[in-house]
Length: 419
Image (cartoon, rainbow, N blue to C red; front, side, top):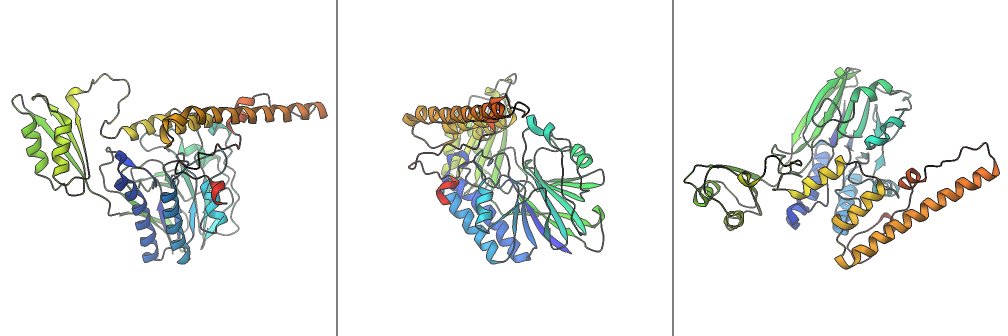
């Protein structure tokens, strides 16, 4: 029997609610997974993408991750992973650096053997580029089971935009299981006799994620081939408590009733999410949040549903606006250059006075890359008219390998800084 941990969506570095403590929580959850892996003596830890929350993790998050991976390596437990949409970059992946440091192995089209299980990888691919995929994988010489690790919103799960059947039918390898990430809700289904399972996120990245967090323990029985020999179980993690308080006010009720309901809960060190509905008197959210903080809460957020226009086109959770914006950006499937600009303006910790300069540098670097590609194409055409020339320089630009380095004093690192 081969036992592995299937985890993902750790989002290390996410400073949720602008709270340093919440940022530490995301790393602590990953460290719990590592500790459990060593305690269970698993054959491997398999990560299904979004190890980091941002494409340019800051120094404390990077050092904490390196420490956890070194602990895993010291226990001789391999860390196998694919790249998720949050951490994908044009100039290279942090996962590649970890591989060069012998702390990780990046999964791909060739099988990596975990005992007698062949494990493959498929990084996150934007919707606009999926028609190009051919799903060609190298068959293993010998394996009791095969598993594909990937990152995306796969059918038949909620919010799906990637047909699992397309992958299974087009693949040159028959998979017994797909171990996937991106959907933060854990769940397991069978599609065309193949298990597809989400491990869920290891920390609550949104107020909508009410269920407990955890990861999968997957066991492959070498004596039973095919999907029947695969056992998938969810294991819980101890994470910071979230307290969800729903208050429906009658016509004569107001802030005192809200405080009464909130005060009935244990708020110590918790993230407290309060939702107000009904027909009662106006309530000032700041006073309720202050009440919860005085009661020991780490973070308190109030959403008065009575004040929200139900006809608003974009529905967001005002208890977690950062998560709502991240989700909307992901849905837009922006180009790499657009993501660079978004990160410069919104996600980076750059001083406001430097934003214009940084955006200008991003654009200049990209234009230079585009000009280089055009020059190469023209040279090839001059040398041999039969050589096909790419005329869509915009798409080549989007795939270019130029990565804009952040300012050395902004607290962020690029992979080149550590190589």
